[in-house]
Image 1 (tube, helix red, strand yellow):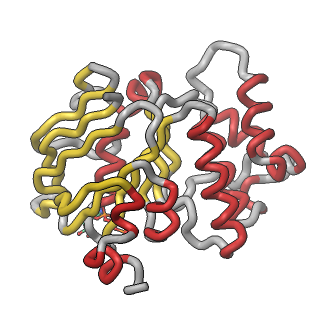
Image 2 (image 1 turned 180 degrees about the vertical axis):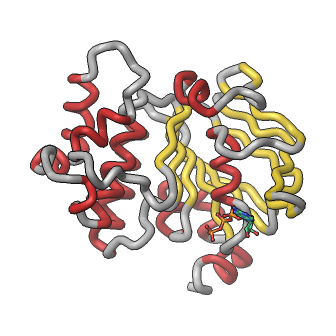
Length: 234
Ligand SMILES: Nc1ncnc2c1ncn2[C@@H]1O[C@H](COP(=O)(O)OP(=O)(O)OP(=O)(O)O)[C@@H](O)[C@H]1O
């Protein structure tokens, strides 16, 4: 098992956002978290990447308890995150944005940069354009590419399809599949449950800070309760 989240509780002040959540991610999988607004999906990702502290419970990554490990060390251990809202640096070029992902690395970056440009030819064409002038979809590509520059073992993706036109959504999901095929494990948070479940080996359904269901993605696509609640009843 690559990542194990065990019975975690997470608070914002006195408010409990995550209340005893457990999940596992095996090496090579694509795993999705789905659930309504406020269910705790983003908070779960932030807790795994170290942006939110645990109140209790533990997180084990690659056999090591990282519950108290600072976020930047978790990046070095192999946890890469592409945050919700993207966080692209507007005054830096596309290439500078990508290189920011690797600022802690001391090895040669050119092969990884080429790999990101291979996945996202649009970024290669526009490597000298300022991040702030890139479209929403292109900024999403930068955020994913920047996370890939950390050479993650697991890539945490928070709402990669948010705000994108349908054609770009399909493209982003294809790219996620390709990233996974090339060897990166993926933990994905998505509002777009239909697409996420299609692509996922397994998925967890979150409600008010807890897991209420977990199953292979395709099984959840057929689950009447999941269909009614998260797939618009279709
Ligand atoms: N900075 C914060 N301060 C206080 N409460 C917060 C904060 N961020 C999140 N919460 C609360 O924690 C709970 C979980 O929020 P979270 O953003 O993790 O949900 P989510 O499932 O990702 O939702 P969405 O799909 O809307 O992004 C919600 O009740 C939310 O109001």
